[in-house]
Amino acid sequence: MSQGRFITFEGGEGSGKSTQIKKLSDFLKNLEQDVIMTREPGGSHGAEELRKLLVEGEPGRWDGVTEALLHFAARRDHVERTIHPALSRGVWVLCDRFVDSTVAYQGYGHGLSRDVIEALREIAIGDFWPDLTLILDVPVELGLNRAASRNTGGDRYERMDRDFHQRLRDGFLAIAAEQPNRCALINAERDIETVSRDITSVVTERLSFALS
Ligand code: TMP
Image 1 (cartoon, rainbow, N blue to C red):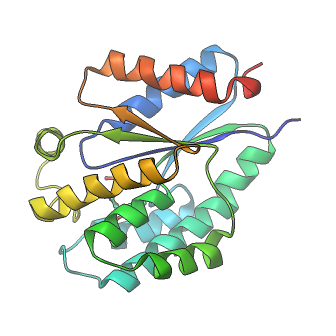
Image 2: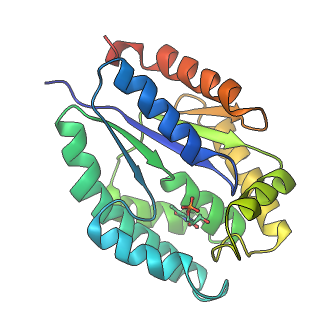
């Protein structure tokens, strides 16, 4: 059996990742592929427990290093117990956030150095990368308005200030520019169907060998 493919979705608050993951999952299932949808922080029993520590409570609850350690602890559990086993069964894994979120949020957002993030990444998951990363880009105001309209109060990260969210967006744009072979930048300001068509065409172009 051939190895499954690992696709990650990245972007700031309100970029529409969950809607688009669901649509890509439906598209792949129509092509008779096995698919799982998962998320970070979370995606395994232990990582979902850690998620509560990360998304609840005051915005300043953790310092940058502690927060990155918690994200990488959750990520290791998720990779070991959910992602690797699924890929080895030939399943497509669609994941809402992965390492690029740590670079954007803890790095660009909170000022944690790239060297520290790289060192933790190496310890936690070694040289394991997505086959494709879709970076959904929306202007900060639009994203925050969308996020505010779907829930009350917001999680810890949604309550960070506007400058923080601008740094996040700049971070994701920088990642997309640095690693064009792995990443595709998607203009997610447009309507759901247009964004979804863009995503399916990127997946079909870049991973066509896995769809036959
Ligand atoms: P979600 O809102 O997309 O479910 O993600 C939960 C929050 O966790 C989101 O605000 C971004 C944040 N986060 C980080 O700060 N670093 C990370 O490495 C990950 C995966 C998420």
